[in-house]
Image (cartoon, rainbow, N blue to C red; front, side, top):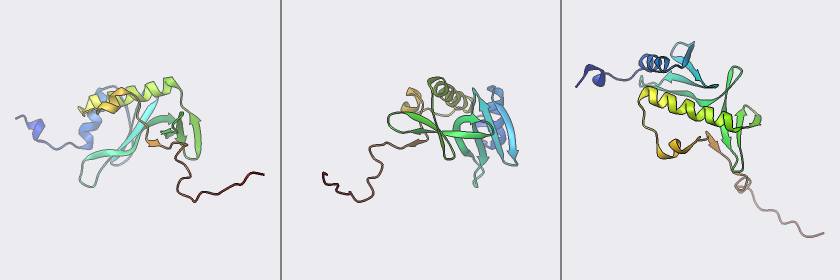
Length: 141
């Protein structure tokens, strides 16, 4: 067994691996970095256990913020705070490339559904909204 396989992964190793894969890495604060490529970005931080994890998952880089992908059933949107912007095909392809590239750089496993296309951060289908409340009967006029 090599010495590298025995060492625990840490955020510095991840940073070097994504830099070598062509990502732009910017340190936000100690222990937190932003990685970006293809117009998309994500933020990595160190977990309490010392392992790297996402502070902000992959999304579209909009100015200084990262918009997450929202699936409304009939269309995908970018959500940046309260603002929703329809996602276009080129943006979805860029997010998919970003996801493939960082997984390949870190040697992570890609799940079947992730390999098929872009996976949204949230799924909110219009046919499901409002089911929690009581149904109101509206008689005909």
